[in-house]
Image 1 (cartoon, rainbow, N blue to C red):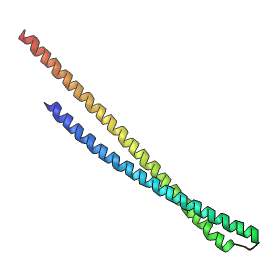
Image 2 (cartoon, rainbow, N blue to C red; image 1 turned 180 degrees about the vertical axis):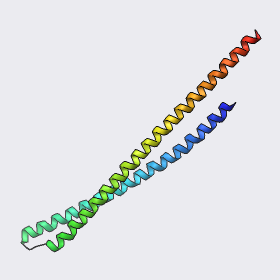
Image 3 (tube, rainbow, N blue to C red; image 1 turned 135 degrees about the vertical axis):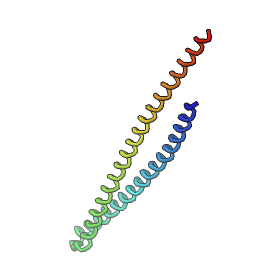
Length: 132
């Protein structure tokens, strides 16, 4: 009956894996939300830059002192976007690697279990043959 213990252990491990996977998905989703917020912020900065540039071209009055900090903000937000996008890719890669490892472990455990079942079945058949 050691097989039942292995099955029970495997089921527990799969449940823990599912819980961990849910946490990973939540983390990745949170990063996506952060990315969208940063992209919105960047777009608003671009809009501000466009308005200042338009005003400068229409009026001929320099807006350089107002434009420079907007450009700095855009650069800062762009760097944050790159960082968050990189974090998303790293999280996805780590999740994919964990899933691949777990699949390999499960396949190995299943193969061992099937071998044990086959061995027990062979022993059972030999016992039946001995009784005849």
